[in-house]
Image 1: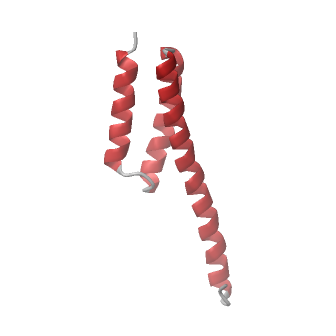
Image 2: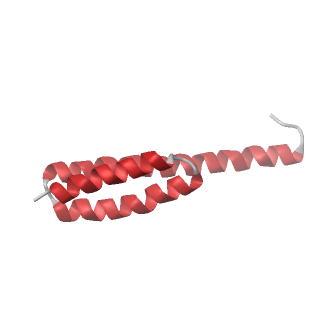
Length: 87
């Protein structure tokens, strides 16, 4: 553990940011799984709703630098194509 007061505070801040980033990444992963599940079930409306929510959080993760730009674009394009192909 650090001895200097500013270092102690930095440890706390880093821990908090790490937790927030982890929550955001897990939310994105869970939304991707949820969207794929809705696509597999065949409910286009639900899949579209989940996809719109996913876009919001995945773009936020990209802005924070948690997910690379190409990965974000690939995931969104792949899921959007699956939703459009649904009948």
